[in-house]
Length: 187
Ligand code: S3P
View 1: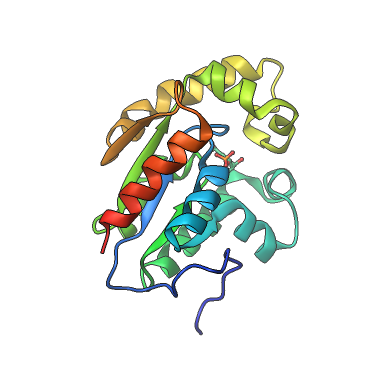
View 2 (view 1 turned 90 degrees about the vertical axis):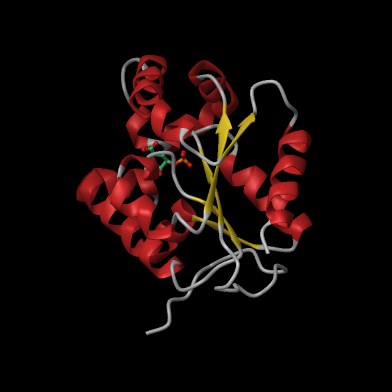
């Protein structure tokens, strides 16, 4: 069965001969908003993994974690990643924990390129504001400590990206422009 996605349209049809551009980074690093805007400008199709998994499951991420566990969510991430092998030329925003399973990452990369939106855990948390309630992994007594823990556990994986964008000191527009430039290099 051909997989269907709820993507931002307006982008070129997914072209398997062009690598995907995958945005990685902590929750709150701006993957979804930057990805959506960059895709519009670069005329690429954008896919937000969490939104797509929520659509398929018919329930929000926090409920998926609560009712079926993180393992179930990670299995859904893997299935989605497998489907994306048949496609290309998209801007992808997987959740911040997608990076932790090398088997899953290697389904797409190479040939896809990975771009790390680098921010400090404190900044990520601050930018997320109230939306941190949507992240089940941060529903802890001390979300700041949990964010630092996630960062320490993942930082080397994130740093292994093909490109690192210092999103700490750049505006949303500047980060978006950098992503657009990288997307345009992929042909
Ligand atoms: C997660 C990040 C979330 C979401 C889930 C798990 C993580 O996505 O996939 O709550 O493990 O860091 P965002 O990075 O878009 O918040």
